[in-house]
Length: 445
Ligand SMILES: [Zn+2]
Image (cartoon, rainbow, N blue to C red; front, side, top):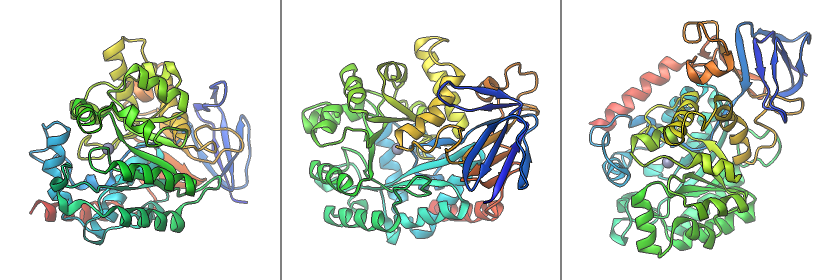
């Protein structure tokens, strides 16, 4: 079986049961799985020096809209709150098609890979001009990242009192049919799966109560996970109270949207009762700190969630509201934001790193990922702490969030090298960027 030996790391951050950090350790990978972690390991296979590097589990991104990498920093969307921001961007997104969806996914996933991400989710909830979820799955396969795409949807257009334009909404029967199609075509429930598909109506303000309920039934029938946006800001709470007569937590619970197979993005405005509900029901949260700052949504009560036992992971969110897709940067922002609200001891570097790795694996139901231990899949990020950003750092692990680096030196997914010496090995990235920029210019026209 193919072997890779990651040799002589400055520190290996295992994220194992006792959170061991091993100085001078090696990681041996055999056939895509971690075979051993420790000192003095040997191999006849590929040997990669990790001298001067910190090795961590691959970071996991649990919320994104990859297509939005084509609409970063759009004038008119730069300073708006959520609902105004959406109304500015919907008509632009409606011009996209299969090529835009595919190329933007390549760009967004490349950006994530360079920032240490080995598994990303994506929430694609609009399918203009023949675009399909398959277009993003092909992109993840091209680059070699593990992927958890979710078949999103919008069904309540403006004429029916919803937020999106009618041209971007789909019939609910067609949405459910396509969910079944993509699950049957791509979902892999096995350990080590490179693709798992989820079901993800966009948000309570863009689909009906019936679709939320039917989506939950369908997902449970198929054994796949459920994902949506929830309790993102005050407008979102007001919409829920006005249209549904209850808070988002109650709405989710009534329609089957709580449980270990559900994760909600944002949850900035969860009440203490809702935090209790999420903890009891094992419902997960994708915390998106940069997007929450950018859209002025507020500070998610991550400290209170974690203390209550809620599973919390990180998401960069779409690149029209971040507008970066740097996952190690997102971990730093998560740490800083809790400190703004709750003081300097509210979240340590190591807790933020845990949320970014193990937390993501827990939220996405991936007990095969999230730590560097024998038997786990070989997804790992190798960070060079011998360069400028970490120069003078006394604690190289803490440096990852306090000072940098913000890009990986090497990245392995299922034991395959996706980044080598800071470069994506699986794509001609300059060509992808050129094509991406051409498509963005076309949209701007
Ligand atoms: Zn989002």
